[in-house]
Amino acid sequence: MGHRKHLQECCRLYGRCGQIDINIKRAIDDKIIIDISDTGKGIQKSKIKDVFLPGYTTKARGWGLGLTLVKRIIEKNHDGKIYVRNTEINEGTTFRILLKS
Image 1: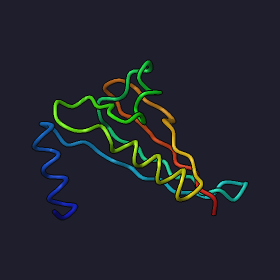
Image 2 (image 1 turned 90 degrees about the vertical axis):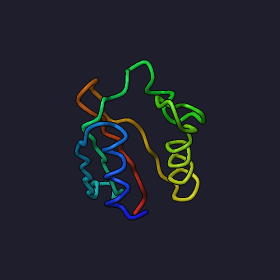
Image 3 (image 1 turned 45 degrees about the horizontal axis):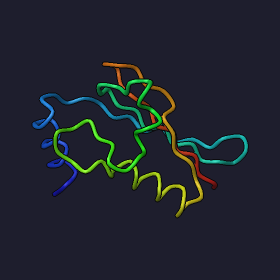
Image 4 (image 1 turned 135 degrees about the vertical axis):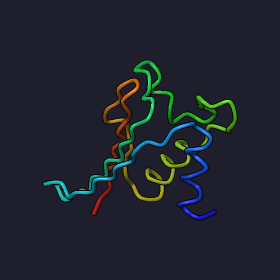
């Protein structure tokens, strides 16, 4: 399934389309910073520590493995770090990825 078709399917499933922004920059310490922000429903503050755990999901369908796999790939394969930088209920979430350049 192409990216466009996949995004259209997401809009259909969730009943609305939002916005995803990706910002990439180089830090003073020569690390690469990638911020990925969305305009989704946000994450409850009490659940932030759980979003990377296997099986964690807020959906009726799904395995809850997406962010677990992302974290593993970034940390194990690229010696990087990912975390929730900011989240606001009904406003969206920003994940930050730090990589060595």
